[in-house]
Length: 173
Image 1: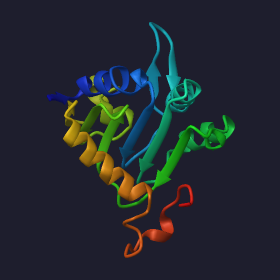
Image 2: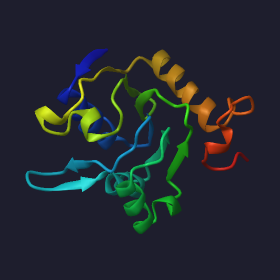
Image 3: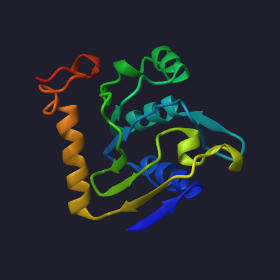
Image 4: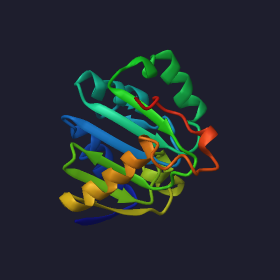
């Protein structure tokens, strides 16, 4: 287990985390923005492009968020037909506030940072939040967080919830 803060979060979560996925990525965040992700010395891709790249490598991406995605995310997602990709599934639940990234069921980030530039420390030194979290490969912790993710995305916590009408995602089969 390793404690991370500020810019370390970006490098670990993005570069060492979900960009290295081989099978699956589960992401939970309260806020979802179309952040820019550096891909080279002078190039970058939007989060939407990165998600589509992962899906193109047959990586399944499940993204759980609380608030509606930013206008920029929605606009590009619509233009690139993100919702038509069977390897990418977005879920919204207004009660979600935990932030996690689970990669291939073997690596996990859990902490305070949203999937935003300010949250991950990707912005300049003066335009970032003060965040902390940890990464781990502890199987029991990963299973526990994954189980909570599944409880929400499979709508097992929904019946008594006051906000149920504001949630969306694939219909339960």
